[in-house]
Image (cartoon, rainbow, N blue to C red):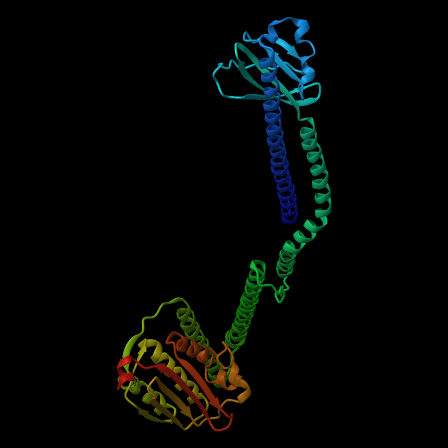
Length: 463
């Protein structure tokens, strides 16, 4: 059963039950009041007729014992139907429609008894008591007709049932509208959820309400927004994986095709020594590029799978350990290295930090630079390490993509220098592991400047 039907039925049941209970209580209350009033009247009639009977017994002692002819016609003296019983509780005179079951009352008992009874479709109140007048003992019973009160109750019940039925019939459209108002936003949420499930992730509800349903709609919209963002991230990740696989296959295909071709040529033909050396040089060159690619890929996978522990280290001490290797690389490439570092301590993983600096140096050297400048400065909150070269630079429109895997600004130059297009992607991942920030500046003509901002340790902040 749908929620709409459940709410609608609940409204109808509650409305009907409420009216029925209210009507019962109201009618019962009115009936009880009417009966109480009838009881008072019945007691008043009894007292009046009791006084009449006592007067008759006073004026004519032993009246009930003088025979049937004497008793006959006495009922005309009373204002309501009565019944008279002797001391032995045997009926002496009666003109009431029903004979009561008398209680055995003591002669000195001051209680006045009464009972309700129905006879021939009528309702009556019988009041009786033991009366002593001189030596006469008699039981007097009076009958008061309360059929009008009972009929009024029945009429009220019938009238209220009709009113309740009319109200329920008139209330159905109102209940329907209220139910629709309550469930309308939920239906909108359900439809929006189905549309999102169909792939329309930009779907929103936009219910402008401040109640719980409005909060639910707002939460749903927030969830849909997060889902859309996550789907976009997954789409980008999937596209990146596809691009990665395609670029990786492309990077493998070209050198492998050349290696296989030259190897087949060496195997199938007798070639002059110069051609053999040229073929072997090409095979060696492509093999070196494949080796560089495999090393870079291994580093890439390690960075994604392994957890690294960062340790506090002084910047100058780090570079004192790195400089011998950096100088050797620069001397071999006829590049001058300039280092100027301020005091400061940062958190690093030594091997990753070393790999990051070497990759940046390697990129600077491949850009045909003559000088590389390494500077380090502290601004009180961050320690910034900048690596700047005066090489060919990077076109400004390419700056946003150089950290993508297999992306190369100058593909032919990178391949000649055994580049794989993974260096800056590795650097970017290492920067993230160190919780640092990287900024790249270049105008495409006069070199490139890459700045890495690390958080200073507390001791250095206070100095």
